[in-house]
Length: 125
Image 1 (cartoon, rainbow, N blue to C red):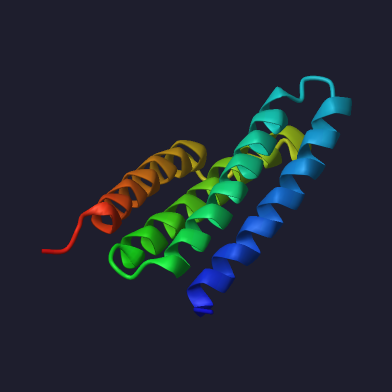
Image 2: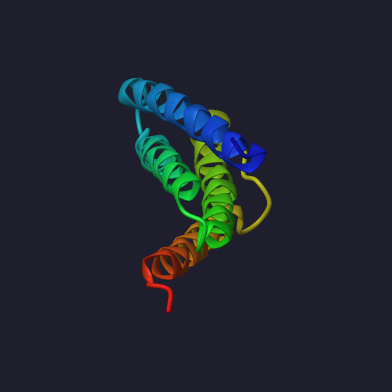
């Protein structure tokens, strides 16, 4: 298995675990809506990373785009959810614009994944 895919799958597992933990903490925290949002993003994108990685292992055409897009999604999720979680739990704000930058990176990553999917679905002539 490619090391890139292993790293993405490792991140997917960590995102899933962190998402469940953050959701549990948010349920007991007054005003934990930011943490709940971070938890949702972690769990959804963790599952997505696992799925994209599985598809990337099965195709050759479009694989690079899928892996680049998944990597952008992973970094964006880390920035976005990390910023929200730190604000909710420790009242610490990361660098200015970290959450919006992370969100933008996730959107860009999904667009690259879409391009990779289109390349994979295009029949060869």
